[in-house]
Length: 264
Ligand code: NDP
Image (tube, rainbow, N blue to C red):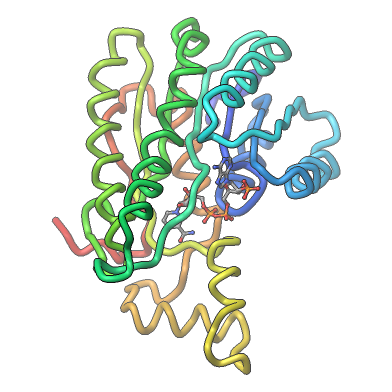
């Protein structure tokens, strides 16, 4: 079975690390041409060098671009259009979570979190939509979190903004069906990535190794599969939803949480 991605043009925001980078790699392995962005130039060029060392014949494009900067996102879209000649797949992955409860979330933190969750998706969609409308298999896939349905008090702002993103994703699926563009999302539990590495650096017990630390998180949080996910695992769900293999699926979600999902 193939994802039918040979020669398709894909864009992954936040493709220089973690889940985004694993998604870039899988798309390329499946024959797609892939453009990705991130804010840090060095991280971006390292990711490009890594991909080209593994796939020397791949067609790739990278751009330093903050998805919250509308003008930069438009420039990125123009560059992709110029070099690839069109786009079939947009994967909105760029972002991060905020650890804070009601007491420790200031007004500006709420605004920042809402801006990140909405505009990291809205700016790329606005910029890439004209090209997606011309594709015969256009798709938009948003990386979301299980927090959208299962809020956590210690991530209060992220949880509520994630719920809004899930709602938005479903509205877009309905509106864009007229253009034959499918819109879906994945709901993540906890997945090993740079975000978790950053939290690991600030752990209280410096004696703990990475394996012990993530093992303890999985145990403490009661993840039924008793481990965090690997970036390749959500990447596979993203690539499936984004690909023509999911041609009759829109307004849908795939849960990638190792069974952490407790709702029906
Ligand atoms: P990483 O930190 O490993 O990757 C995040 C990527 O996004 C990097 O390439 C980063 O590059 C880029 N990025 C972040 N902000 C921006 C921005 N404003 N503009 C452009 N690029 C940006 O984290 P993950 O792989 O874990 O995160 C991927 C997505 O999954 C995020 O949206 C995150 O919130 C979500 N998620 C992850 C979970 C997990 O457990 N890992 C759980 C739930 C959701 P740079 O910093 O150079 O810009």
